[in-house]
Image (cartoon, rainbow, N blue to C red; front, side):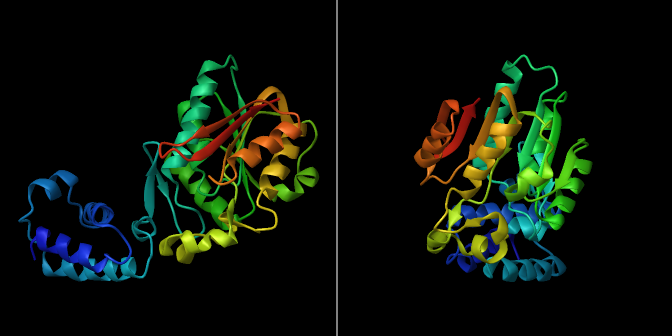
Amino acid sequence: MQLEAVKKLLIEKLAGLYEATEAESILLIVLEDIFGYTRKDLLLNKSLMLPEAQLERLNEIVTRLCSGEPVQYIVGHTSFMGLTFKVNAHVLIPRPETEELVDLIIQDLKQSALPEPKIMDIGTGSGCIPIAIKKHVDKARVYAMDISPEALEVAKHNATINRCSIHWMLADILEWDLVFAASMQFDVIVSNPPYITHTEQQEMHLNVLQYEPHLALFVEDQAPLLFYETIASFALTHLAKGGRLYFEVNRNFGQEVKELLQKKGFKDILLKQDLQGADRMVRASL
């Protein structure tokens, strides 16, 4: 079967889940990663014939895609800040909005006078945030924690393949006062915590609901700011003087997070929008 026919068929099969442009992007990922065709091959040689064996494998993958399984889990990895990260059902797939948060932190660190900034990432998942920061700020001493041992295994693997030294911690941030010695101080505390309420589930894509870890996604409707409140309290004790706290936030609760931090005594609070114009990042100082 010619590539152009394969493309048309795949777009038709995925029409109920993805728009045509997204389905085409998924096809490019699959053909490049599984079968070794470069994007240039695929774009310039639409008459390319796929052998029967490859078509059988492609059909298996399409079946998984039609069930809603994210293509990143199928191929086993994704790109974040120009780096490759292993992903599986134990970790969230890194999003472009999180790249914007990491870029903000990196730029701030490069403008600071800190020779060896000490950084803590809370709820690290795949490790994309601490690893990307370490790759761009080599002198940083980077720590990362997660409640999931399976997620930490993925994060450790990603640190290895990206040649980064990170201090990993298996711990629950809701019990931070039992985990951290008072002397532990950080120049940067960052978190992309669970922030989607259960009410918002009906607005979410099938592939997120059915396949990505709910532990890392959802927070109870009655306490949507639970992790922001907890991490802000942690930061009051463990953020060094002049240090900065960074959050990725639910677009519906940006102002609430900002007000929470103001009430706790943080200053120079910035609520920043992502490239889509949604409230997405908060930065605050002590």
